[in-house]
Image (tube, rainbow, N blue to C red; front, side, top):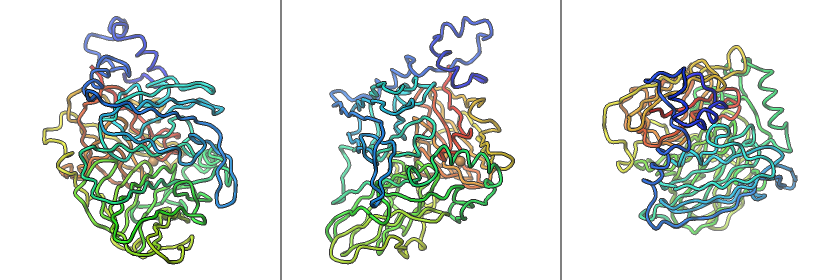
Length: 491
Ligand code: C2O
Ligand code: CU
Protein backbone atom coordinates (compact mmCIF):
# COMPACT_ATOMS: atom_id res chain seq x y z
CA UNK A 1 0.00 0.00 0.00
CA UNK A 2 2.90 2.34 -0.68
CA UNK A 3 1.52 5.75 -1.44
CA UNK A 4 -1.80 5.12 0.29
CA UNK A 5 -2.14 7.64 3.10
CA UNK A 6 -3.75 6.80 6.43
CA UNK A 7 -6.85 8.78 5.60
CA UNK A 8 -7.25 6.97 2.31
CA UNK A 9 -6.75 3.60 3.98
CA UNK A 10 -10.22 3.19 5.48
CA UNK A 11 -11.69 4.00 2.11
CA UNK A 12 -9.46 1.45 0.40
CA UNK A 13 -10.02 -1.17 3.08
CA UNK A 14 -13.73 -0.47 3.03
CA UNK A 15 -13.81 -1.24 -0.67
CA UNK A 16 -12.94 -4.81 0.25
CA UNK A 17 -10.32 -7.14 -1.11
CA UNK A 18 -12.32 -7.93 -4.24
CA UNK A 19 -12.48 -4.26 -5.18
CA UNK A 20 -8.71 -3.99 -4.85
CA UNK A 21 -7.78 -6.98 -6.99
CA UNK A 22 -10.30 -6.00 -9.63
CA UNK A 23 -8.93 -2.47 -9.89
CA UNK A 24 -7.03 -1.72 -13.07
CA UNK A 25 -3.90 -0.37 -11.39
CA UNK A 26 -3.11 -3.43 -9.25
CA UNK A 27 -1.54 -6.43 -10.89
CA UNK A 28 -2.04 -9.98 -9.68
CA UNK A 29 1.10 -9.88 -7.51
CA UNK A 30 0.41 -6.50 -5.87
CA UNK A 31 0.32 -7.00 -2.09
CA UNK A 32 -3.04 -6.22 -0.58
CA UNK A 33 -3.25 -4.70 2.90
CA UNK A 34 -5.01 -6.75 5.57
CA UNK A 35 -7.82 -4.46 6.71
CA UNK A 36 -8.63 -3.77 10.39
CA UNK A 37 -11.86 -5.73 10.21
CA UNK A 38 -10.78 -8.45 7.82
CA UNK A 39 -11.42 -12.15 8.43
CA UNK A 40 -7.79 -12.63 9.50
CA UNK A 41 -8.33 -10.17 12.38
CA UNK A 42 -11.39 -12.12 13.53
CA UNK A 43 -9.46 -15.40 13.34
CA UNK A 44 -6.57 -14.00 15.42
CA UNK A 45 -9.10 -12.83 18.01
CA UNK A 46 -10.79 -16.25 18.08
CA UNK A 47 -7.41 -17.85 18.87
CA UNK A 48 -6.95 -15.50 21.84
CA UNK A 49 -10.34 -16.09 23.37
CA UNK A 50 -10.50 -18.51 26.29
CA UNK A 51 -13.67 -20.54 26.54
CA UNK A 52 -15.89 -19.28 29.32
CA UNK A 53 -13.79 -16.15 29.87
CA UNK A 54 -15.60 -13.37 31.68
CA UNK A 55 -16.34 -9.98 30.18
CA UNK A 56 -15.39 -6.92 32.24
CA UNK A 57 -17.48 -3.86 31.50
CA UNK A 58 -16.33 -0.31 32.16
CA UNK A 59 -17.85 3.06 31.25
CA UNK A 60 -15.38 5.77 30.33
CA UNK A 61 -16.48 9.36 29.85
CA UNK A 62 -13.90 11.63 28.23
CA UNK A 63 -14.77 15.18 29.21
CA UNK A 64 -13.79 18.40 30.96
CA UNK A 65 -12.66 18.02 34.58
CA UNK A 66 -11.20 20.08 37.39
CA UNK A 67 -7.96 19.05 39.01
CA UNK A 68 -6.63 20.33 42.33
CA UNK A 69 -2.87 20.87 42.12
CA UNK A 70 -1.91 21.51 45.74
CA UNK A 71 -4.63 24.16 46.05
CA UNK A 72 -4.49 25.50 42.48
CA UNK A 73 -7.61 24.42 40.64
CA UNK A 74 -7.12 23.85 36.94
CA UNK A 75 -9.50 22.82 34.20
CA UNK A 76 -8.44 19.94 32.00
CA UNK A 77 -9.77 16.94 30.09
CA UNK A 78 -9.93 13.56 31.83
CA UNK A 79 -11.66 10.18 31.93
CA UNK A 80 -14.49 10.07 34.47
CA UNK A 81 -13.32 13.41 35.93
CA UNK A 82 -10.19 12.04 37.57
CA UNK A 83 -6.47 12.27 36.73
CA UNK A 84 -5.33 9.60 36.14
CA UNK A 85 -8.63 8.10 34.99
CA UNK A 86 -10.04 4.99 36.69
CA UNK A 87 -7.70 1.99 36.72
CA UNK A 88 -9.14 -0.77 34.56
CA UNK A 89 -8.30 -4.27 35.71
CA UNK A 90 -9.04 -7.72 34.34
CA UNK A 91 -7.46 -11.15 34.00
CA UNK A 92 -5.49 -12.37 31.03
CA UNK A 93 -7.81 -14.03 28.54
CA UNK A 94 -10.85 -12.03 29.66
CA UNK A 95 -12.76 -9.68 27.43
CA UNK A 96 -12.77 -5.96 28.11
CA UNK A 97 -15.89 -4.09 27.11
CA UNK A 98 -15.31 -0.36 27.46
CA UNK A 99 -18.07 2.07 26.56
CA UNK A 100 -16.57 5.41 25.64
CA UNK A 101 -18.72 8.55 25.73
CA UNK A 102 -17.14 11.60 24.20
CA UNK A 103 -18.05 14.79 26.05
CA UNK A 104 -15.01 16.64 24.68
CA UNK A 105 -15.42 19.46 22.18
CA UNK A 106 -13.36 17.48 19.66
CA UNK A 107 -13.27 13.94 18.27
CA UNK A 108 -11.41 11.30 20.28
CA UNK A 109 -10.49 7.60 20.43
CA UNK A 110 -8.94 5.27 23.00
CA UNK A 111 -5.71 3.42 22.29
CA UNK A 112 -4.93 0.46 24.60
CA UNK A 113 -1.19 0.95 24.75
CA UNK A 114 0.81 -2.27 24.71
CA UNK A 115 -2.10 -4.68 24.39
CA UNK A 116 -1.86 -7.26 21.58
CA UNK A 117 -5.50 -6.77 20.71
CA UNK A 118 -7.65 -7.04 17.62
CA UNK A 119 -6.75 -4.39 15.08
CA UNK A 120 -10.18 -2.76 14.80
CA UNK A 121 -10.15 -1.94 18.57
CA UNK A 122 -6.72 -0.23 18.50
CA UNK A 123 -8.12 3.30 18.50
CA UNK A 124 -6.22 4.86 15.61
CA UNK A 125 -8.47 7.45 13.94
CA UNK A 126 -8.95 7.15 10.19
CA UNK A 127 -7.07 3.88 10.16
CA UNK A 128 -8.68 1.37 12.53
CA UNK A 129 -11.87 3.34 13.27
CA UNK A 130 -13.55 6.63 12.48
CA UNK A 131 -12.87 9.09 15.34
CA UNK A 132 -15.70 9.35 17.89
CA UNK A 133 -17.32 12.78 17.39
CA UNK A 134 -18.26 15.12 20.25
CA UNK A 135 -21.40 13.69 21.85
CA UNK A 136 -20.70 10.30 20.25
CA UNK A 137 -20.10 6.86 21.72
CA UNK A 138 -18.03 3.87 20.82
CA UNK A 139 -17.77 0.43 22.42
CA UNK A 140 -14.33 -1.15 22.55
CA UNK A 141 -14.52 -4.91 23.01
CA UNK A 142 -11.52 -7.19 22.83
CA UNK A 143 -9.69 -10.07 24.50
CA UNK A 144 -6.68 -8.99 26.56
CA UNK A 145 -4.37 -11.96 25.97
CA UNK A 146 -1.34 -11.14 28.10
CA UNK A 147 -0.86 -10.19 31.73
CA UNK A 148 0.97 -6.96 32.49
CA UNK A 149 1.02 -3.26 33.24
CA UNK A 150 -0.51 -1.25 30.40
CA UNK A 151 -2.30 2.06 30.03
CA UNK A 152 -4.77 3.77 27.76
CA UNK A 153 -5.00 7.19 26.20
CA UNK A 154 -6.49 8.97 23.15
CA UNK A 155 -4.79 8.77 19.77
CA UNK A 156 -6.00 12.14 18.53
CA UNK A 157 -4.01 15.37 18.35
CA UNK A 158 -2.50 16.64 21.60
CA UNK A 159 -5.12 15.08 23.90
CA UNK A 160 -2.56 12.93 25.70
CA UNK A 161 -0.86 16.09 27.02
CA UNK A 162 -4.02 16.83 29.00
CA UNK A 163 -5.29 14.48 31.72
CA UNK A 164 -6.63 11.75 29.44
CA UNK A 165 -4.78 8.63 30.59
CA UNK A 166 -5.23 5.74 33.03
CA UNK A 167 -3.67 2.43 34.02
CA UNK A 168 -4.80 -0.86 32.50
CA UNK A 169 -3.75 -3.87 34.58
CA UNK A 170 -4.05 -7.40 33.33
CA UNK A 171 -3.51 -10.09 35.95
CA UNK A 172 -2.11 -13.53 35.33
CA UNK A 173 -4.32 -15.99 37.25
CA UNK A 174 -1.28 -18.29 37.59
CA UNK A 175 1.19 -15.67 38.83
CA UNK A 176 2.60 -16.49 42.26
CA UNK A 177 2.09 -12.88 43.43
CA UNK A 178 5.11 -12.94 45.72
CA UNK A 179 4.41 -9.53 47.24
CA UNK A 180 2.24 -8.04 49.96
CA UNK A 181 1.21 -4.72 48.49
CA UNK A 182 0.95 -3.12 45.13
CA UNK A 183 1.09 0.51 44.01
CA UNK A 184 0.34 1.89 40.58
CA UNK A 185 2.49 4.94 39.87
CA UNK A 186 1.52 7.05 36.85
CA UNK A 187 3.92 9.83 35.88
CA UNK A 188 3.08 12.91 33.81
CA UNK A 189 4.44 16.25 32.68
CA UNK A 190 1.81 18.92 33.30
CA UNK A 191 1.10 22.29 31.71
CA UNK A 192 -2.70 22.41 31.34
CA UNK A 193 -4.13 25.40 33.23
CA UNK A 194 -0.80 26.46 34.76
CA UNK A 195 1.38 27.01 31.69
CA UNK A 196 1.04 27.29 27.92
CA UNK A 197 -1.63 25.04 26.37
CA UNK A 198 -0.42 21.97 24.49
CA UNK A 199 -1.35 23.81 21.27
CA UNK A 200 0.85 26.76 22.31
CA UNK A 201 3.71 24.38 23.11
CA UNK A 202 3.36 22.82 19.68
CA UNK A 203 3.41 26.24 18.03
CA UNK A 204 6.46 27.19 20.09
CA UNK A 205 8.30 24.06 18.91
CA UNK A 206 7.36 24.81 15.31
CA UNK A 207 8.83 28.32 15.65
CA UNK A 208 12.00 27.11 17.31
CA UNK A 209 12.42 24.46 14.65
CA UNK A 210 15.84 22.89 14.54
CA UNK A 211 17.37 25.38 16.98
CA UNK A 212 16.13 23.42 19.95
CA UNK A 213 16.33 20.03 18.31
CA UNK A 214 20.10 19.82 18.27
CA UNK A 215 20.79 19.08 21.88
CA UNK A 216 19.94 22.54 23.23
CA UNK A 217 16.93 21.53 25.31
CA UNK A 218 16.52 22.34 28.99
CA UNK A 219 19.40 20.07 30.02
CA UNK A 220 21.33 17.00 29.13
CA UNK A 221 21.15 13.46 30.37
CA UNK A 222 23.77 10.78 30.15
CA UNK A 223 21.10 8.09 30.32
CA UNK A 224 19.29 9.58 27.32
CA UNK A 225 22.50 10.33 25.44
CA UNK A 226 21.76 14.03 25.04
CA UNK A 227 19.03 16.50 25.73
CA UNK A 228 16.20 15.45 28.04
CA UNK A 229 13.63 17.16 25.87
CA UNK A 230 12.68 20.47 24.38
CA UNK A 231 10.05 21.58 26.89
CA UNK A 232 10.31 22.45 30.57
CA UNK A 233 6.91 21.80 32.11
CA UNK A 234 5.67 23.90 35.04
CA UNK A 235 4.83 20.73 37.01
CA UNK A 236 5.43 17.01 37.10
CA UNK A 237 2.71 14.82 38.57
CA UNK A 238 2.60 11.42 40.22
CA UNK A 239 -0.92 9.96 40.21
CA UNK A 240 -2.25 13.42 39.42
CA UNK A 241 -0.52 15.19 42.34
CA UNK A 242 2.37 17.67 42.37
CA UNK A 243 5.35 17.09 44.72
CA UNK A 244 4.08 19.76 47.13
CA UNK A 245 1.05 17.55 47.79
CA UNK A 246 2.40 14.05 47.26
CA UNK A 247 0.28 10.92 47.42
CA UNK A 248 1.10 8.43 50.17
CA UNK A 249 1.62 4.71 49.61
CA UNK A 250 1.02 2.92 52.93
CA UNK A 251 2.48 -0.42 53.94
CA UNK A 252 4.09 -2.15 56.90
CA UNK A 253 7.82 -2.46 57.59
CA UNK A 254 9.21 -5.66 56.13
CA UNK A 255 6.48 -5.95 53.53
CA UNK A 256 7.29 -6.48 49.88
CA UNK A 257 5.83 -3.82 47.60
CA UNK A 258 5.24 -4.21 43.88
CA UNK A 259 5.50 -0.93 42.03
CA UNK A 260 3.85 -0.69 38.62
CA UNK A 261 5.28 2.47 37.09
CA UNK A 262 3.81 4.00 33.93
CA UNK A 263 5.22 7.03 32.11
CA UNK A 264 2.17 8.76 30.61
CA UNK A 265 4.03 12.01 29.90
CA UNK A 266 4.02 13.68 26.49
CA UNK A 267 7.61 14.94 26.35
CA UNK A 268 9.42 13.86 29.54
CA UNK A 269 11.45 10.84 30.58
CA UNK A 270 11.63 10.21 34.35
CA UNK A 271 14.36 8.81 36.59
CA UNK A 272 12.84 6.96 39.52
CA UNK A 273 14.28 5.88 42.87
CA UNK A 274 13.02 5.13 46.39
CA UNK A 275 15.13 6.64 49.16
CA UNK A 276 16.88 4.03 51.30
CA UNK A 277 15.77 1.12 49.11
CA UNK A 278 16.82 -0.83 46.05
CA UNK A 279 14.49 -1.79 43.21
CA UNK A 280 14.28 -5.32 41.84
CA UNK A 281 13.02 -4.92 38.29
CA UNK A 282 10.73 -7.83 37.35
CA UNK A 283 8.83 -6.62 34.26
CA UNK A 284 9.08 -4.07 31.52
CA UNK A 285 6.16 -3.05 29.31
CA UNK A 286 4.17 -5.78 31.03
CA UNK A 287 6.46 -8.69 30.19
CA UNK A 288 8.65 -10.54 32.71
CA UNK A 289 12.45 -10.21 32.72
CA UNK A 290 15.14 -12.03 34.67
CA UNK A 291 15.06 -9.95 37.87
CA UNK A 292 17.78 -7.30 38.21
CA UNK A 293 18.35 -5.20 41.32
CA UNK A 294 19.32 -1.56 40.82
CA UNK A 295 19.03 1.79 42.61
CA UNK A 296 17.26 3.76 39.92
CA UNK A 297 15.71 3.44 36.49
CA UNK A 298 14.74 5.73 33.62
CA UNK A 299 11.38 5.46 31.88
CA UNK A 300 10.78 6.95 28.45
CA UNK A 301 7.32 8.11 27.46
CA UNK A 302 5.04 5.09 27.02
CA UNK A 303 7.37 2.71 28.91
CA UNK A 304 6.35 0.75 32.00
CA UNK A 305 8.47 -0.95 34.62
CA UNK A 306 7.42 -3.19 37.50
CA UNK A 307 9.76 -3.49 40.48
CA UNK A 308 9.71 -5.20 43.88
CA UNK A 309 10.93 -3.44 47.00
CA UNK A 310 11.51 -4.82 50.49
CA UNK A 311 10.33 -2.00 52.69
CA UNK A 312 12.12 -0.55 55.69
CA UNK A 313 10.59 1.46 58.50
CA UNK A 314 9.65 5.13 58.13
CA UNK A 315 8.69 7.54 55.36
CA UNK A 316 10.70 7.23 52.16
CA UNK A 317 10.60 9.54 49.14
CA UNK A 318 9.67 7.87 45.87
CA UNK A 319 11.17 10.49 43.57
CA UNK A 320 10.60 10.66 39.82
CA UNK A 321 12.82 13.43 38.48
CA UNK A 322 12.30 14.84 35.00
CA UNK A 323 15.37 13.38 33.28
CA UNK A 324 17.52 16.11 31.77
CA UNK A 325 15.01 18.74 32.84
CA UNK A 326 14.25 20.73 36.00
CA UNK A 327 11.63 19.44 38.40
CA UNK A 328 10.25 16.24 39.77
CA UNK A 329 7.25 14.23 40.85
CA UNK A 330 7.01 12.59 44.26
CA UNK A 331 5.15 10.04 46.36
CA UNK A 332 5.75 9.06 49.97
CA UNK A 333 6.08 5.40 50.88
CA UNK A 334 5.11 5.31 54.53
CA UNK A 335 5.56 2.29 56.77
CA UNK A 336 6.01 4.11 60.08
CA UNK A 337 6.63 7.43 61.78
CA UNK A 338 8.84 10.12 60.34
CA UNK A 339 8.61 13.49 58.63
CA UNK A 340 7.13 13.69 55.14
CA UNK A 341 9.97 14.13 52.63
CA UNK A 342 10.39 17.59 51.10
CA UNK A 343 8.95 18.35 47.65
CA UNK A 344 12.48 18.46 46.24
CA UNK A 345 13.74 15.34 48.04
CA UNK A 346 16.64 13.88 46.05
CA UNK A 347 17.40 10.37 47.30
CA UNK A 348 21.05 9.38 46.86
CA UNK A 349 19.84 6.28 44.98
CA UNK A 350 18.99 8.51 42.00
CA UNK A 351 22.72 8.86 41.33
CA UNK A 352 23.75 5.28 42.08
CA UNK A 353 23.42 2.14 39.97
CA UNK A 354 21.06 2.97 37.11
CA UNK A 355 19.26 0.24 35.16
CA UNK A 356 20.60 -0.08 31.62
CA UNK A 357 18.61 -1.69 28.82
CA UNK A 358 21.53 -4.10 28.36
CA UNK A 359 20.97 -5.38 31.93
CA UNK A 360 17.63 -6.86 30.96
CA UNK A 361 16.98 -10.30 29.53
CA UNK A 362 13.59 -11.68 28.64
CA UNK A 363 12.24 -14.26 31.04
CA UNK A 364 12.39 -17.64 29.23
CA UNK A 365 8.57 -17.77 29.26
CA UNK A 366 8.39 -14.80 26.88
CA UNK A 367 11.63 -15.03 24.86
CA UNK A 368 10.92 -15.47 21.15
CA UNK A 369 11.77 -19.00 20.00
CA UNK A 370 14.95 -18.90 17.98
CA UNK A 371 14.35 -18.78 14.26
CA UNK A 372 15.94 -17.03 11.30
CA UNK A 373 14.76 -13.54 10.41
CA UNK A 374 12.52 -13.56 7.32
CA UNK A 375 12.33 -9.85 6.73
CA UNK A 376 14.23 -6.75 7.79
CA UNK A 377 13.10 -3.15 7.88
CA UNK A 378 15.43 -0.27 8.56
CA UNK A 379 13.72 2.48 10.54
CA UNK A 380 15.76 5.68 10.26
CA UNK A 381 14.81 8.35 12.79
CA UNK A 382 15.72 11.90 11.92
CA UNK A 383 14.66 15.51 12.23
CA UNK A 384 15.03 18.49 14.45
CA UNK A 385 17.94 19.94 12.48
CA UNK A 386 16.70 22.19 9.69
CA UNK A 387 13.05 22.45 10.64
CA UNK A 388 10.54 21.20 13.20
CA UNK A 389 9.66 18.05 11.28
CA UNK A 390 10.49 14.60 12.63
CA UNK A 391 10.67 11.76 10.17
CA UNK A 392 10.89 7.99 9.74
CA UNK A 393 12.91 6.97 6.70
CA UNK A 394 12.91 10.59 5.59
CA UNK A 395 9.14 10.97 5.53
CA UNK A 396 6.50 12.40 7.83
CA UNK A 397 3.35 10.45 8.73
CA UNK A 398 1.29 12.03 5.95
CA UNK A 399 3.29 10.41 3.18
CA UNK A 400 4.91 7.55 5.08
CA UNK A 401 5.77 4.40 3.18
CA UNK A 402 4.33 1.54 5.27
CA UNK A 403 6.65 -1.23 6.43
CA UNK A 404 5.03 -4.29 4.92
CA UNK A 405 5.04 -7.73 6.56
CA UNK A 406 3.19 -10.99 6.10
CA UNK A 407 1.56 -13.02 8.82
CA UNK A 408 3.72 -15.80 10.27
CA UNK A 409 7.10 -14.13 9.73
CA UNK A 410 9.99 -13.26 11.99
CA UNK A 411 10.59 -9.58 11.33
CA UNK A 412 13.54 -7.47 12.42
CA UNK A 413 13.21 -3.71 12.79
CA UNK A 414 16.55 -1.95 12.83
CA UNK A 415 16.15 1.45 14.43
CA UNK A 416 18.82 3.91 13.38
CA UNK A 417 18.61 7.22 15.22
CA UNK A 418 20.29 9.87 13.10
CA UNK A 419 19.07 12.76 15.21
CA UNK A 420 20.36 14.43 18.36
CA UNK A 421 17.39 13.46 20.54
CA UNK A 422 16.22 10.21 22.10
CA UNK A 423 13.04 8.64 20.72
CA UNK A 424 10.91 6.17 22.70
CA UNK A 425 9.68 4.09 19.74
CA UNK A 426 6.35 2.36 20.23
CA UNK A 427 4.78 -0.39 18.13
CA UNK A 428 1.06 -1.07 18.40
CA UNK A 429 -0.41 -4.56 18.76
CA UNK A 430 2.86 -6.44 19.37
CA UNK A 431 5.71 -6.76 21.78
CA UNK A 432 9.11 -7.11 20.17
CA UNK A 433 12.25 -8.60 21.66
CA UNK A 434 15.21 -6.24 22.00
CA UNK A 435 18.33 -7.61 20.29
CA UNK A 436 20.63 -4.63 20.95
CA UNK A 437 23.09 -3.03 18.57
CA UNK A 438 24.62 -6.39 17.65
CA UNK A 439 21.30 -7.97 16.74
CA UNK A 440 22.21 -11.03 18.81
CA UNK A 441 21.08 -10.01 22.28
CA UNK A 442 18.42 -11.79 24.32
CA UNK A 443 16.90 -8.58 25.63
CA UNK A 444 13.46 -7.94 27.09
CA UNK A 445 10.13 -8.13 25.31
CA UNK A 446 8.88 -4.56 25.01
CA UNK A 447 6.48 -2.43 23.04
CA UNK A 448 8.27 0.87 23.64
CA UNK A 449 12.04 1.26 23.58
CA UNK A 450 14.31 4.28 23.94
CA UNK A 451 16.62 4.78 20.96
CA UNK A 452 19.36 7.23 21.92
CA UNK A 453 20.96 9.83 19.62
CA UNK A 454 23.04 8.17 16.88
CA UNK A 455 22.27 4.72 18.31
CA UNK A 456 21.32 1.62 16.31
CA UNK A 457 19.06 -0.94 17.92
CA UNK A 458 17.58 -4.14 16.50
CA UNK A 459 14.27 -5.57 17.69
CA UNK A 460 12.56 -8.75 16.49
CA UNK A 461 8.89 -9.60 16.40
CA UNK A 462 6.60 -12.43 15.41
CA UNK A 463 3.93 -11.27 12.98
CA UNK A 464 1.02 -12.98 14.70
CA UNK A 465 -1.49 -10.14 14.87
CA UNK A 466 -2.77 -9.18 11.42
CA UNK A 467 -3.86 -5.66 10.57
CA UNK A 468 -2.47 -2.17 10.22
CA UNK A 469 -0.37 -1.00 13.18
CA UNK A 470 1.18 2.32 14.07
CA UNK A 471 4.89 2.54 14.72
CA UNK A 472 5.80 5.92 16.18
CA UNK A 473 7.80 7.98 18.59
CA UNK A 474 5.96 8.35 21.91
CA UNK A 475 7.18 11.91 22.27
CA UNK A 476 3.74 13.33 21.46
CA UNK A 477 5.22 16.40 19.79
CA UNK A 478 7.52 14.30 17.60
CA UNK A 479 4.60 12.07 16.66
CA UNK A 480 2.50 15.11 15.77
CA UNK A 481 5.40 16.55 13.77
CA UNK A 482 5.50 13.44 11.60
CA UNK A 483 7.45 10.67 13.36
CA UNK A 484 4.96 7.89 12.67
CA UNK A 485 4.54 5.13 10.14
CA UNK A 486 2.61 1.87 9.73
CA UNK A 487 3.59 -1.77 10.13
CA UNK A 488 1.29 -3.07 7.44
CA UNK A 489 0.29 -6.72 7.11
CA UNK A 490 -0.28 -7.62 3.48
CA UNK A 491 -1.36 -10.76 1.67
CU1 C2O B 1 0.65 5.04 23.51
CU2 C2O B 1 0.32 5.08 19.40
O1 C2O B 1 0.51 5.11 21.48
CU1 CU C 1 10.94 11.30 19.15
